[in-house]
Amino acid sequence: MNATLIYYSKRRNSPLFAAIAIIAREDDSMRPQTIREKQALETKMNQTRKECIDMTRKQIENQYPMNDWNCAERVLHGADQAHGLDIPEESFKLIGGFGGGMGCERTCGALCGAVAAIGQKYITGSAHQTAGLKDACADMVHTFERELGSIECAQLKKRHRREDTGCRELILRAGELLDQVIARCETTGESAQ
Image (cartoon, rainbow, N blue to C red; front, side):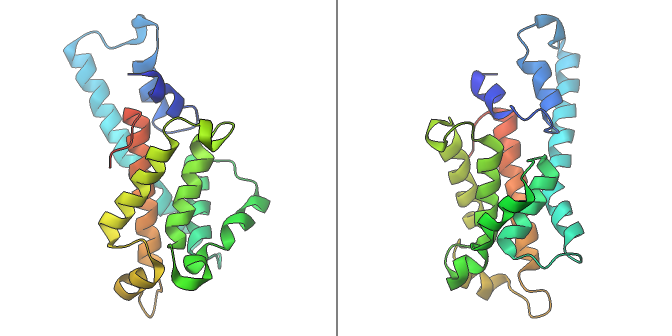
């Protein structure tokens, strides 16, 4: 494990933090010593990673009947609840204008909400000084585009919008993809594109 991993895991309320902390500790007494201990820890980390993948989706699903938020707001609220981002309620106004592809069907608001969540989770000080931030954001954009076929709202609506549910499934999928990117960052200290 490297320093980047510890940096990415700075949010101690992260579900993966406990498993990662054991490996990353400088104190060798906490490291697994035998192959069996290492396998058990790896199994625990994989199980925890799987549990984490659907956290944002579940939070978004829970909020659907209660709130009339747009796509960007839904993803950011879901990520805030799932990952303990501690975003002040007033700050959610900042993402509201990104819904509906910034109101003109350009870059998908759900993607914008996911990138905003990555920023809130990992930036310390300024974005330019945050190691790995560009890679994490690029990973989110590339993963989103690969899985959903585009990052443009107009194109996504043609493929994914339903008359009865709107972009609900796309928004839920954006939450899943965000959790996958976060899991990659927290388990490897790197983003995979």
